[in-house]
Length: 495
Ligand SMILES: *Cc1c(COP(=O)(O)O)cnc(C)c1O
Image (cartoon, rainbow, N blue to C red; front, side, top):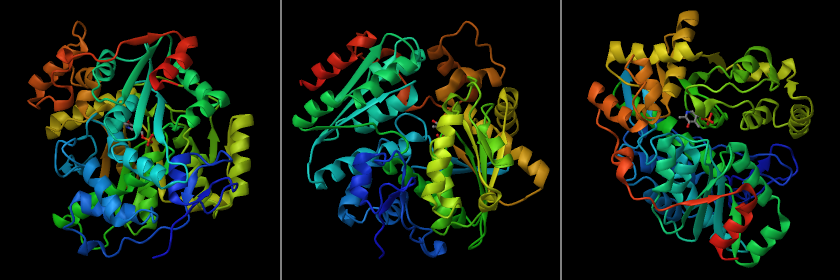
């Protein structure tokens, strides 16, 4: 089997083994690591009986040749266990004319669990294999969701610690409660007085603080961020698209080699990039439909070839997609330019200096598989109401963006290819907006009350991870000033 290595999209770091790419996260030249090769997964009709974990092993192994089959298998067993509320891990539900791929059955009820539950094991394994084995300290600022998902993922994983900073003023009551009730001996949660940018800047300062990093290193710690550009997050995301296809094959919904469309509600372009990578590994895909909310930079990009970040962010009811600069798009640019690292480098410089870039016509054709669409706030609410009223199926705001964009696509193109919609969050995670969409009275109710109301109204049980959240014991109560973050973290690490 050909050995996969990793290259930086900007050309300054080539043929890096997976264990290094995992531990470093981002390449030395600021680029992102991309695999040098994609193995074909083989004849899919012969794989239809594989369960999620066996399929994950088959796919993920091909990218990490430095790990033994047994190691990867152990990691997968630890990641996709009873933390997930269904042994199927990522079930497919055929409703409303599409196949919803439910990626929200993990511990924090959103798709980031799919990769974050595996990442700690990959990082820990990679660190053990490196020349300087160290304890991994994950340091992350969060506006709510990623922090909780990372805390759950790293909880009690040996040789790791996780420290999450959240803005005391900037997260919802439920998000806050989820974090301060976090269990695990290696988890630390810090509320910082200020907004998300304050938390983010505090973390950035520490990553750039050479003295701090040296002290930490001497004590056997290595700082890492677990952010979404790490290959350890990207690669596990390819598994569920194959899994969806295999479930549809098994149910007789597809014939061998029949193509599907995949719709992905997109923010940082990580989830949809994984779907694109699947096409290189043998998944039969007709169109990849990139769904944006009102922050529709990507919609404009696929229409015009111009990526223009010179606009202000609009907060929406699908907040996990409120992004102006989609980092993972850099990996697509690398691919459609025929792996032209010089091109990627200068394009990223343009983006940095001028706030926008345009790609040459000759590369535009190489992204014909993508279709960009967007849904505004009222489209999104209407999609939730429509799917619920007509099909008795409840979707969250992000999934609703995807569904709305798909409906539009269908209207315009009349393309009747069977279509998978990535369903990225539980509706109970964005309860207030979902209740609003169903025209329930939300004005005087707290978020906790709304969860109960929504469950009563829809007869869907409250998901276990947020059941009883209100009465869970609080383990974390550090509240610190912006300027005290460094000392607080030193205290935690005892350095
Ligand atoms: C992160 C997230 C997205 C966007 O995924 P990207 O990989 O950043 O494009 C969509 N929906 C939900 C619920 C998310 O948490």
